[in-house]
Picture 1 (cartoon, one colour):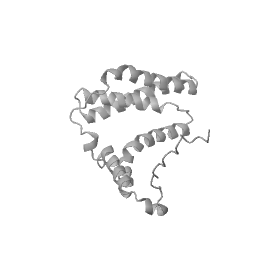
Picture 2 (cartoon, rainbow, N blue to C red; picture 1 turned 90 degrees about the vertical axis):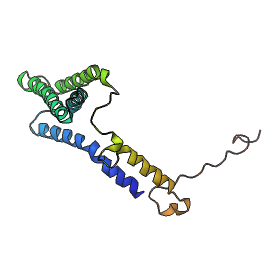
Picture 3 (cartoon, rainbow, N blue to C red; picture 1 turned 45 degrees about the horizontal axis):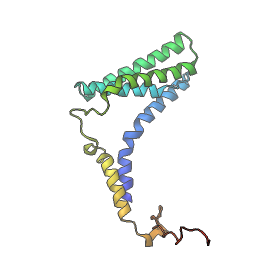
Picture 4 (spheres, one colour; picture 1 turned 90 degrees about the horizontal axis):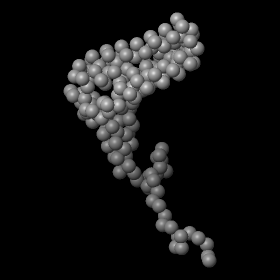
Length: 173
């Protein structure tokens, strides 16, 4: 069971860090007095642009810079609408999310399932083997399950199914 948690902890930062950075941006904008409802749109446009840079052979670092620039451009558009044109912050935020997700849906559709050249596969990544290690740890934990030792376990072992009674479980008749 400890292998599962160790693998889970090694994969966790890759999933949590982007959300923490987006949350930090939302908190900072709230402290400045701006209701920012659109980090999903910023992240989607930045991720799509970074992926397109990588797919075009520019390399991962130019992909990071391109994605950052695209997210910054969309956030500047939101800031322009809210600060200069005095658009309602809620409506501008929702419109920015719709614009960001719409752009990524239209422009990114042609590039779905394309392999990235020069980037390691997830199972070969530095995050402890990626999801393959997580699945392997889960299989190891499941195979080590001992129903007799179930009393002291945090998660009990699955119990075998009891056979159905004769007659489909119905009463007499």
